[in-house]
Image (cartoon, rainbow, N blue to C red; front, side, top):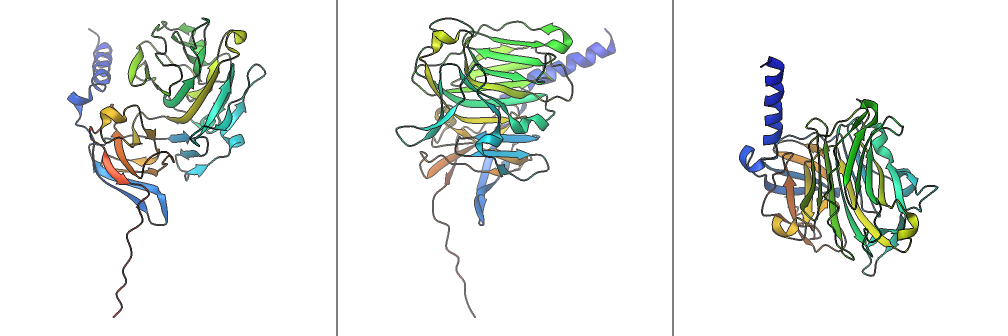
Length: 342
């Protein structure tokens, strides 16, 4: 056996073990959550077992707030026109902000409808990407067949791109610059009509893997992914609903909310649920600024429909998470300051 092959084999084994968190690492343990008195949205989380994670960017779009962190920059909030490079297209209508019956503001789409490229991602060179979002369709997105895309990921806006496409029936991937077409994964999308579905996509070029979950269930597990174009970061090419036959779904309506994306799988999540078993499909990722094995800093966003008592969860880079949430009161009054004069 050649020495080079032995090294590669060991590397692949290590990457495989990384997805066995109960074996390789203990679950994160949150000791405290605090906020800056001058800005109660700035959070500091301390604890143990967080491991190390590099967040070169962390982006959250709750429609009402579009928060971005990029390495070496302060957290900042982008307006609608600054956030998307393009809304809609010559063939599709844009996603439109709309209020629901309970006062929540979400994106609404009608038929073939999507937004194109999250603008801040154009400056990144990441070869891994995590995307999470909520999707609620009014009808079966497979009732008339076709290839109906929920999301596309590219690393180049050109014919030489690496591309990933998740549709209602399969997940495909290719690297045009390498003249490579990967195997098709036929896992479908696994969501429900007239319900909020939590969709997640994790791409790790170094491991050659793509994983997709719907409502916490793994529906695609790809192990032959190859990325071309070194230095070109993976980006959200489009998100929404992009059917191959527009007329077949022109009456379909859908909602999208809580779009989160980062180069890292590690993240902080808040939920009104006290256990991860319940919180798994009812949580919101937070914007991360820095991450060390014992301390995480970032920006806290609490949805209006959450109660004042919420729970923090830390998802490590290998997928381990605390089973019980750390209880935190987000809207409790600050403790009074007592001044004693001599």
